Amino acid sequence: MILHPRTWKCLNILYITFVTLNIIYSNVYETVFCEGQVATYTQAVPLKTTTTNDKPTTVHSNNGDDWWPHHYDLTTATLDADQPKKTVALCHELTIYAIPNTLHVLAFIIGFWYFRIKENEELDALMETIFLQAHYMFGAQEKLIRNSKLFLCAGMVWIALILIVSGLSIAAYGIPELIFQKFNIRLSGLIISLASIQFLGKVYVSCTYIALIVNYSIQCEFITWAIKSICLQLHERNLNLKDLMHEILRLKQLISKVNGSLSKLASLCVTNFALKVIIGFSILITTDQECAFGWIYRIMFPLVWAPVMMFPLIQAARVTKTGEKLRQIACELRVFGYKDSDLCDLDSLILFVSSAKLRAKLFSMPIKPSYLISTFAVISFVLLLLFQTNVIRTTL
Image (cartoon, rainbow, N blue to C red; front, side, top):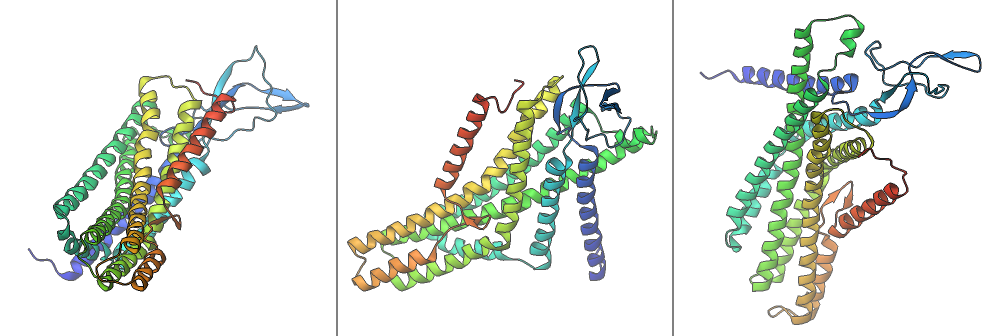
């Protein structure tokens, strides 16, 4: 059955609206319910009324009596050895939920404009261009197809891991019901239905992440192979200088497109992933768990987000490193000569390659392997120093 074009247009609008509302609902659900119990914990505080400066101050426990019991005033609470104590959870919605979810919604809106409204076909054009050049390298086209499939399969595995982590969260802490307890709503079916809708929204959220990261990574992979192809042709002396400059100019244009809107989207995603890794790691080392599912969930949470954070950074660094290799080959040509070109032409080649700056960018700055290694070395040293000085106290 062939549907009318207007019918397809209406279905398309309804589908986009459904996905958008589901993603927004998922983010709001996480923030309101503190989904996943990604919270920090304070020291034990008394659970009954105490008196300081003749003013009674009551500290409430997180037992479901209040529907938003995530923040407490501990400044006037006094500790007494005879009073019962309980660890109070502080769920910092702004840093743990609101900021990452806002970054995701922003990335979704920009990506929606970039991929659907703008009628972007840069990936298709890049693939056609690189496949035409790849015949200079033996087996390059097969490797590009294989790597692209591996990226897609890795993305699907990552989505499955995210859903497993969500399942572990429910197994460890159950479905949040604070709002329903506040209004004395005991309809378990309604609670499970809303949680199921949120679970579906998490699938859409994860697919959004993977669509952006895989798209950016594949384009970086194709550009890397294109630069390698030019380097091989220079070693085999199959290009004249004029054609070489045309190829380098085309590569510069391709990299400029990748460093545009797509790079900004990938930067938002990497920032979001970094926040989740930091939050998950800090909670893992500073809080204790009461069940095995809780420990597994806390351990898997940062481990799942760390690879997807690192992957676009590594792909961008590979592009920059391969571009530096092309510049190094141009310097070698200046020393050893290239066909019948004179020194003036070779000097022009070096200047042209140096000014092209074949570098992939994230956060509007070039990503180099040396930058990544130095950054992680400094972070590791600072963390080790904080642990040794007991600035960060662990419960492990």
